[in-house]
Structures are given as structure tokens and as C-alpha cells.
Length: 358
Ligand SMILES: NCc1[nH]cc(CCC(=O)O)c1CC(=O)O
Image (cartoon, rainbow, N blue to C red):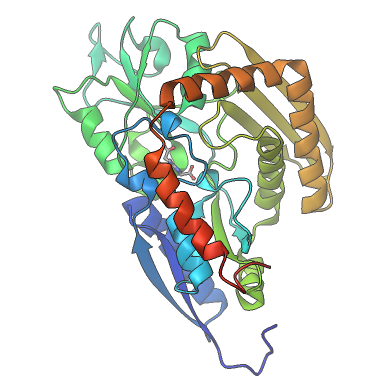
């Protein structure tokens, strides 16, 4: 436990090296520095498995910790003290010794349509997905988005697009490139200063966003009480309750960022939390959707509500959809697991060190 007379500590904040990750880390650093002027904060940026493997479809990479593993190794080693993540990239089960310390106020969690610069169809600007012609190519690397959008737009072609946000926008606007539009998280575009590129939001019931989308999380060592106390001050309670409910739902569904689970949450002034969850088959043919609501007074109660939503989804057809998704992925990745094995060994080595687990 940090006592009040212990010398102010310095904390190293770490994240991926992408432009978005660096901006997000500075958002957290500025908030910490303002709230705790006696402590010092610095940054460290590194690339992750998700950054390194840009060729393979995210869905087939399949791992739940693509964006977090290398960072967690550095955290548990004590090389860094706080990891800044997009919450939606944080697996619902963390390695032993790691904990979510803070969840900051959420940006708009919506998914947005971004149309190719200057694109016109029949002489008119494109204002929504409804304006795109048959066989137009829409770029997104999220199975959740593809699965849901195939239901309403079976005539469009959904094509994987990888790379950081700047790269994706360059691929979109390339006059020789195949994409008529991309679907991207609005929060990332806004934080990078590309908010003006948003053509339209794609909202429920057309598209439910990812669990945790739009929120920033700070991951800490579970036994670092000083870091935990600092993080407590950054946490935005309404965002935290919505997001822990969404994450509890996904945890029960045994999913990761690459399964077609969508959500939408609302918390009103009376403390009533409403969470809608969806599971959609990869081809869009099957879809289950449910809503739960209840008064919540703590993160634990929010978590219980999210877990209850998952149970209803599983019982009403979700189980069959998730099993089919798993089978599909296994059949497409058979014999190509080497990269993942290497990373797993690395993290196990760290977790075996005495004192790194709680
Ligand atoms: N790894 C993808 C990812 N992780 C977080 C964001 C955007 C920011 C957020 O959702 O908080 C994105 C980009 C996207 O989905 O378009």
C-alpha cells in the first residue's frame, strides 16, 4: 500500500505504437498528470502481434490478445506500469497478475461509414450504405460488422482491410483501390482528427457496436495499489458500468474481439442499465438479439446483468451460432498456428516468475 509520506513514484505508460494508440496514451497521461501533479509520468510505445501480422485476416488470427500480449509481458516484468488500450481490444479474461485499473469516459461507441473521397453514384454523393450499388466493395476486418451488415445489404461485397487507420484511409481513397467505403469505429476517427470523414453512423438495429467500443482502459499489475489508486480517479462510473456489463456478456459467450457479438447499452439517471446483445452467424443467416434491464448500484451488479444477457442469448440460439463460428475458423486455420505458439510461450515464461501472480 502506498502511504502518503512515501516519495512520489514515477509511472511509465505503455501502448502500441500506432498513431491512435499514442494519442490515447497521451489522453490518459494528461489526465493523470493533471490529477496527480506530484507524480511523474512517461510513455513507452511498442508493436504487438496484431501490428506485425498485417497480412492475415483478423478473424483467422483468432487470438484474443493480439493487441495486448507483448505489453502485458512488459507490465508483469515491471518495465512499464500502466497499459493504455482501446477497451474493445482487451480480452475479457486477463493473464494472472493483470487487472483493468481504469475505464475512462466513453467516446461515441458507434460504427461509422466512411465513403471514398469524391465518390459519386449516378452523379450523386453517397450518404449511406443504401446509396451503394450492387457489388460495391465495403472494407472492414471485423466479422461482427460483416455478419450484421450482410443481413440488410446482401448485395454488397465485404472485403478485409488491414493496417492502422491512416493506412486504411489511404487504401480507401486510392483511385485504383477496390473500396467504395469503409466501416470504422467513430471513436478512433474522432481521436485521430478524422471526424469530418464520417459519412454516416450505422446504428442499431442495423449494426450493434463491439463490446467496450469507444472506451479507453488502463491495465495495471493487480498488486500495484498505488497505480490502482491513481486509476480509480480516472474511472468514469457510467462508462464503467456499461462496459463491465458488456464484457461480462462476452466473457460468458467465451468470445473475443473477433466473434460476431454486438451490443448497445444505456444507463439512465435512476440507475437503470439496459443492455441489448446480438450474436450473428458469419453469413448473416442466423441472428439472435435480446435485451436485459435492471437497476444497478455497483460494477458487480452491472456485471451480473451482462452475464444474464449472455445466458439468454445462449439459450435462444446463440450457442449454435457460436459453435458454427468456431468450427469455421478451425477449418480455415488448420496447420497454421506457429506464430501464436511462440507468443504463448513467451507469456507463460513471464507468468511463471515468482511474484508476478497475485
Ligand atoms: N483494433 C481495432 C480498433 N480498436 C479500437 C479501435 C477504435 C477505437 C475504439 O473503438 O475505442 C479500432 C479501429 C476500428 O475498429 O475501426
